[in-house]
Image 1 (cartoon, rainbow, N blue to C red):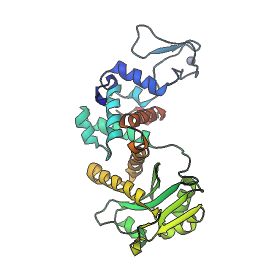
Image 2: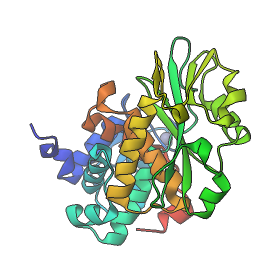
Image 3: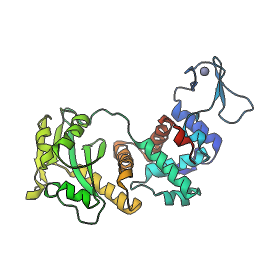
Image 4: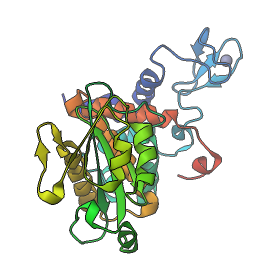
Length: 308
Ligand SMILES: [Zn+2]
């Protein structure tokens, strides 16, 4: 069966029922008192409206979420989430606008919110005993062919309009990317200390920034790209290189240009899809479900609710 033939992509009642399954796997709870008992549907009222017996409040599953204040119908949000979660290289706001039949401004707003929902909160470090974490940097923006980090002056690169992206990938696991100012040890140390488990085997190139912080890990192997060395036994950074190739095809092919201001959101998007990829047993629909759950998990602010 086509994923798209499911009713929650087509009508409001089914979309609300599907969202309830996602948000309330254990059954509904009251947003005001947190109660789970004596919650009943309000007869004759709009779809999804429920009343909490103890506190008498009426609510729906979308209360306090972006779905409540958006004029876009919930089943269209489900379509957008599926498109964004399943497009390996991302989907532009122009494409969303054309496919969903919403205005470009609305598509842009939806894409923005979906991307925010992809941003991971506080997560445990990658790796662990017996696990490998690869770290590497790449440049986004500008036309010059990427050169090895160690051969570039980070300050000159900044001046050339290129942004530096640092990515950590656990082999067989998740990716975590950061937009960094330079590749010094001072910049890399806090990222590696926070995001990589000390019992991991850390795989990097020979960039100076890794030398000292590398000693904090169970094992640290460096391959010297400058000497044409790319693989030495289990020491290599092929996994993170694979991540960068997806990121670059997405940024160049889909988004054309990502300003430095928005780069962190773009990285969150590519990290999300990579960390919830098919190879880890997460299919397109399951990934889209995680994304929808992420939207509900984000608190609304006044500014958010005043747009689209
Ligand atoms: Zn209540």
